[in-house]
Image (cartoon, rainbow, N blue to C red):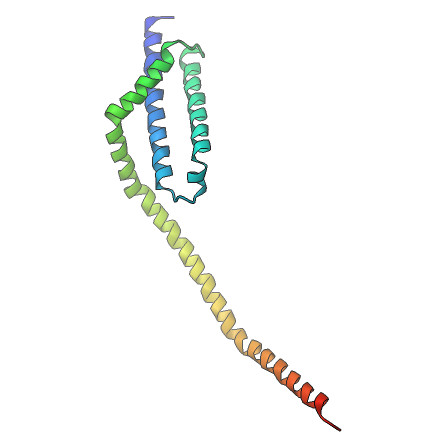
Length: 161
């Protein structure tokens, strides 16, 4: 194996370490933002375990592309170096990019989705109220008619002849 392939695979493993740091930081932010009763917060350990498994699968997929799956001893060291590099250098820029994306992209989409759901809910409530308004005299007539007939029956039944 040539020196350039080894260097490229070292850079690839450092890149997977940085990606793992970004993904785990994102996962921690999502878990911290969730309500304490949410299923994500309650099952955070299992979700984190699944994320680590997928990160490991992704790292070996990168190894398959770069080096036909050959694993060297410096690969995990390069991944740990990538994670430390993320914490030391890339943490603040990625957090800034994440906040900007949240404010510029995700929140407006979330507000539009909530607005559409609210409009649908209000339209259904308007139809329900119109239907109740139309049916209220009939329901009132049936309710009072039943009481009238029950009282009339009692008077006829209890009357001495």
